[in-house]
Amino acid sequence: MKKITTDPAERKSVRWQVRAKAVVRRAPSPRAISWGRLMTYDRRKQLTGFLFVLPVLLFFAVFNVYPMLKAFQISLFEWDLVSPMKFAGLKNYVSLLSNANFLQSFKVTWYYIVLVYPASWTLGFAVALLLKADFPGRSFFRTAFFLPVVFPIIGVSLAWWVMYQPGGLVDSVVGKTLYWMTRSRYAMPGIAIMEIWRETGYWMILFLVGLQSIHPEYYEAASIDGASPWQVIRYITVPLMRPVFALVVIISLIWGMQVIVPMYVMTHGGPGGTTRSLLMLIYETGLRDWRMGAACAMSVVLLLIMLILTVIQLRLFQERGA
Image (cartoon, rainbow, N blue to C red):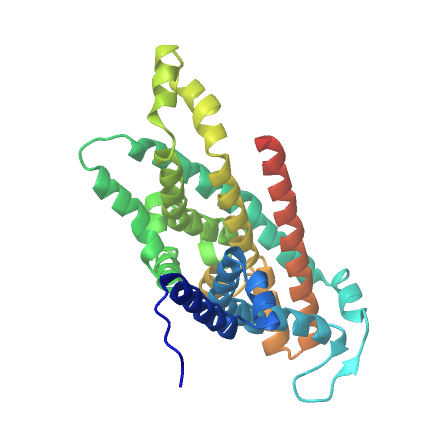
């Protein structure tokens, strides 16, 4: 029979012994202690964030990284999608240097990047500066300029193709029949006019967001110092808008390298290949002529050009911003 003590000090000592034994029984194992030390709060937070991003990373790896690696592999072979692949080494890449269609398509794509998009940037920035001011009907004009961006590119291309027909709306405005879509002299400028009209609203929205992020105190200080509107744009607006300009340049570069729909819908690459973009040539080479090796080689070259130009542009904007 267990002896029951009545001494308060002794009873307190017994209670502490019981608690100590309970703590010893609940003590974690060395493995649990090491895992607890390893998974600190910051590391658990990083792991949680990584688990949330993991589906996107898997999607990017499956549908972007793997196709790029597969395209590079196929570019080293001759393959018509039916016969077994024959190893060709760098033959497909070397042949591009003497391929007149590839050089012409690269020239058309470069025309798009150098002329069409800078013109749409300039108009978009000018419209953004005008529509930044508060005046009656500002929302209507913003919507009107942005509306062409919402329309599907195929529908817009078909509508402009109809307007470019001989005796159509464009010829009525010009006052002369120019046969826009059937003459090499006017085909590419005609497509460029349509693209500038369509893209201006998109760049306008990006520039408006950047302009609204500039604090009004800069403009107040400039007005107190007596700066002219041109000086305000040159020394305040443009330097503070440099991140937006960098984004616009990179987006337009990627879009310009991948342009295909307006040429395909309006001219099918004609007349004489003067409106055939590089992406259209890749499509025709791979899925019409069944020369997948050459088409993949063009795709790899296109990817490398995009990467090089993007890195150069980022470096330039970083140096100017430093």
